[in-house]
Structure formats: C-alpha cells, structure tokens
Length: 557
Image (cartoon, rainbow, N blue to C red; front, side, top):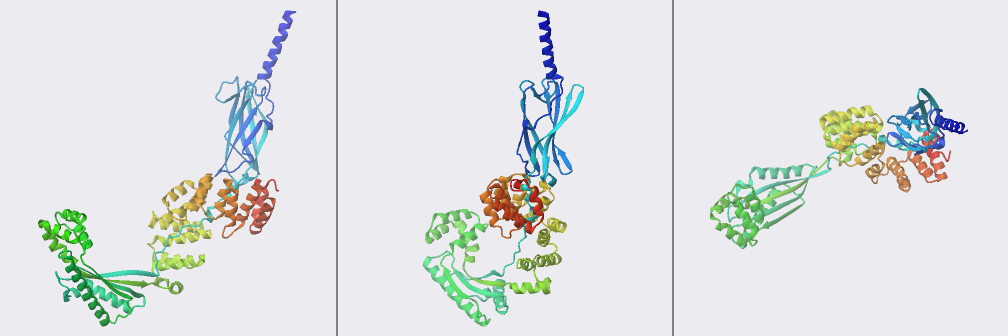
C-alpha cells in the first residue's frame, strides 16, 4: 500500500517536471506586452520605443531559449530591430533568465531608422524558440501602431540662407586736415607753411568739392594752439591771435578760389595744448620721458606743470627741440560728404551697363528688389566683374538655394568657400546644404564655423529638430515666426506657443495649416482640425493623403 502511494507521488512530480521543462511553450499573448510610446513616434531620424513584457508564472519553460525580434511591418516591407534573447532558468547562457514559477518583467529596447513608408505601420514581436534539439516558431504578436512622424515636417529648405552684406553707403563723410606751424611766440603766417604738401592737398580737396556735384563741404574748422611753455595768459593771447590770423587767411583763400558753399566755418583756440604734448611725448624716444608723464599726472595747474618740467633740465632741452615746436600750430579740418549714386542711378546701370558699377553698388542694388530673377542677374554680374569677391558666389548660391536648384547652389557656395573659407555666411549656407543631404556631422561643423551670425538660429533649430533635441530647437528658434519654430513648440507640447507662432507666419502655406491642424488634434479641437486640413489640402493635395495616414488625426478620421 505504501509502495503504491510512493510510486503515485513520484509519477506526479515527474509529470510536473515534464510540464515545466519538456512541453512546448504556449503562444505569447498581446496582453503580456505594453509599448512606450504607443503609437510609435519619430524622434530625430529614428523610431525608438521600449516594449515591456510581463511574463506570467508557469509560462516560460525552464529549458527554453526564446529570441524575440521586434519587427515593424509597413506597406509591402518590414524592418527588424535588434533581437532580444530570453532563457529559462535551467538554460546555461547569458540571456535574460525568466523564472518558471514566478514569471518576470522584461524590458526590450526597440529602434528603427525612419523611412516615410513607416508612417502607416504596426509593431510585432516575432518568437523563435529552441528547446533542446527542438526549434519552432510561435505566432507573432502585435504590440503597437506607428508611426507619428510629425517631426519630419522640419524643412531646411524653408530656412533663409545668409547673404554676404554690401558696404555701400549713399553718403560717406571724409575728413581732411592740414597743419600750419608758427615760430615760438609768433602768430605770423609764413609763406612756406602755406604751400606745404598738406596745405596744397587740403586746398585741392576744397576746389574739387566746388566742381563736383557728388562732393559737398559740410563744414570747415580751425583749431589753434600754443605750446605749454610760458605763462598761461600770454599763451591764451598767442593762441587766439593764431586763430584770428588763420581764420582771416582761410576766408580770403576761399574767396580767391570762389568756394562759396562750405557749410559752416568755425574756429577756436586752446591756450596750452597739454593733451597734444602728452601724446607726442608718449610716442617719442626721449630719455626719461616717464618722469615728465608722471609730472603731468601729479600737477593739474598748468604753470606748476611747466615749472616742474623745466626743473628736469636733462629732459627739458629735448622737449623744447622735439615736442614744443609741433604744438605751435593751427589745424584746418574740412568735413566733406561724398554722395554716392542714387537708387535710380544704380538700377539704371544694372539694366544698361553693370560694369560701370562698383562691387558695393552691385551688391547694394540686389537689396533693392525682392525678385529672385533680378537678384540672380545682379549676382551673376558680381561674379563676372569681381570674380575674386566671395560675396558674389555666396549670394548667387543663396538665390539658387531659395529657387530649389541645390546643385547650382552647392557649386557657387564651394567657390565662395575657396575664396573665403572663414566666411560665416558661406559656412551657414553650406550647413544648410548638408542638412538637406542628411549629413548632420558636416552640418554641425559648418554651423560651428558660423557661430554668432545673425539668422543662424533658424538653421540650428532645424538641425536640432533633425537630431531629436526639441528643447534645444526651441531655444535656437527664439522668437522666430516660422513653421519650423512652431513645430519645435508642438514637439515640446507648448501648444499655445505653437498656435501663436503659426498665426504670425508671414506667408502661411500648406504646412502652416497642417501644423495648425495638429495643434487642434492635440488639444481636442475638431473644428480646428477640419478647417485647417481643408486649407492645407487646397494648397497642396498631397497633404490630404498624408492626413489620411497620420496617426495625429486617428481619432478624427
């Protein structure tokens, strides 16, 4: 009797062991799995997700090895992620071990390089089982839908490329000066001082301004000085006399030269030119000049200064010979405006003979129009007549980029880069080309070389969108009112900010309305979805097809 009972118990235990080890595994059930996110979502260039498996007790065979392969199925194709291995507790291996009696929780990482066809897809888990010498396949299990691909609406082609600026000025002010020197303690004009090369050039500039419509004398100024030796009162009278003598001479000369239009003639004097003294001394090779400079700092009273400097007998002789004579002078200064060509004159020459324009006038002329064809014509003239100026090639490349001719844009930007490798504008524009080519490493390099350039923020924003760093994208866009800037706010769940940005887009297009519809979907505003999808589809029928497959609108379809 006892022997029979023992045999029965032994058989029962063996049966349990056979169930735990030798029986084939049952199919996995969908309720064992949860996926985050679900639906799947595009982040940068990838579709990442985490599948969590809650394997129940008494399910995973002790001698089983299971290879789980996450497979994304779409259209007529499918793509697998990295397989994940599980094993029963009796298997010797390095895979994740699942206890038969207790089950377990397993986290399976998933990632795919995005393809547009994945927008309408389903995520499955495939199971390949090995038990001893047996190999078999369990039915695949669907664990998620995919893919929300809103971030692929980022578009580098809509970023404004950088133009290299012109240096054209309609009016350029030029100043011309000449010095008349006097003998010590005198205010008499010496003929030799009136015919120095400086004075001849000064007079010729005034005469040229009289004869040219493009030159206008704005003002003439006389500053007269005495050197800081002698008493202050004497030097004040001396400097004033030099002012009066120079003023009378200049007014007489203007009459002789028939120069009547010269704005305002002003004159003033400085009794003792300590400022000029200090500058000349500092630039001189006089020995012990630091002693005198220290005296200037220590004494503010002019007569005390002079007395202390004279006490430095070894230095004062050099000062008297080399410095003081240069301070006994009247300085004449003319302010002359050089009037450049008018906008009308520049436009006329662009049409008739652009070779008569300077490079600055041509580059400026391109800013007078919004017509891309005319801009192209002007920049082609810059490249023709000024082939060593990188700005012509950069700006022609910019126009080609906006026109969508990326091959021509690349060729012109390559020429600009050869001429000026460090140009921030060229580097930013080459970075945009790299974004279009999905060469993000080169785009990053180019944008680093363009750091600090106005307008770089929009380009960097698109770069960060493509990298999946949406917070950095928002920061880069700043206050920009573009589709790309609004997209960054949508992806960081700032729907109010995105709506405000989209409403401020200067020239709304199909993408503007499509993004507005996404804001409506994410804020459960059915009317906003319907109205804006209709506007988007009207401007671009392809948006209707996208919307039909877009999981952003799954609840509304």
